[in-house]
Image 1 (cartoon, rainbow, N blue to C red):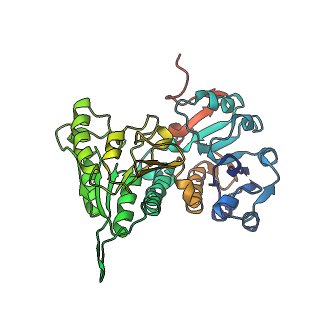
Image 2: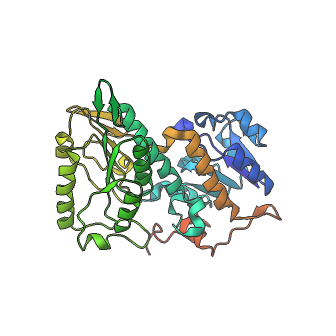
Image 3: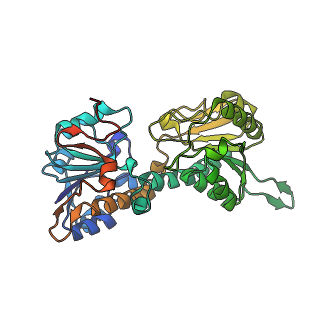
Amino acid sequence: MRIAVLDESKAGEPRVAVTPETIGKMKAFGGQVVVEKGAGAASSIPDAAFEAAGATLAKNANEALKDADIILAVRRPKGELAGKMKSGAVLLAIMDPYGNGEAIQPFADKGVASFSMELMPRITRAQVMDVLSSQANLAGYRSVLDACEVYGRAFPMMMTAAGTIPAAKVFVMGAGVAGLQAIATARRLGAVVTATDVRPAAKEQVLSLGAKFIAVEDDEFKQAETAAGYAKPMSAEYQAKQAALVAEHIAKQDVVITTALIPGRPAPRLVSKAMVESMRPGSVVVDLAVERGGNCELSVADKVTDHNGVRIIAWSNTPGRLAPSASALYARNLLSFLDTMVDKKEGKLAINWDDELVKATCLTKDGALVHPIFAPKA
């Protein structure tokens, strides 16, 4: 099995889909790994480290893709690269299929079997393959570090001979994987942390991390979670009550971190211009949902915006700001999924098309877009 990995840093993605660790494990089940030169540089993995792990280096993407049975990527490759892939090849990547049917069609036309890693079901068996969780965990951690850098004041309370510096007040909006890690990180740095989420189950998790939970806890709140663990869209009446509570709370905060991001939907607007203007100069907002439009009305993708002295941080690829760690986790996610598709005795692909993980993630197969959510309707 020839496994190809491309250099995505040229397109602004610093992460890479393999590491020396995962290359060694792929070689153990018969994989011959070919990595495009420079693919790991932005993740602090030199070409020599890939070679030492047993990979072969390719001069360019075309050479890497030639005769590849499997392509591993972080982001969906550009459409023109689909033409360089062989029919029947398997592609594992974050395919971003929502609203991008035209961008996925070239892979179907070429006969590539593509799998969208972010569609991995959130079941116990698939936890080790869950790229959304592995990357969101790092995003939540990094969001606090970014806030610290821009805030410019100390996070913990400091009692000194010259007087006391009060602890920073941090409000985390959304207590999913990213939010919980942000809470834990801010607490470790000594901040006074509060958090909110529309999912009832989140309250106990927030409290367990030592933060205070802020929410309108009415009957609608008690039923505000889907079977998949995502937040349900809330009624206009609830949103108005929650917004009033949050607006009052935000005005007293030093740092607000928003993490509300639901796959395939525009990010909910949580922080309005008026809310930002109620914050003290020097305060910070970190928006982790800007790739889907942003939770903050004033967010500008990939910029730190200053509005009346309040700075809004909106990086569209926060996990990529910790590229070495993000690559290590993502590569393990891919390896774990690939491991279910390989006959290790024969050293070849043996995909079980009835596997629930395969059914949930397969986008294109046999020349067609086959996923039930994204396939053209008859």
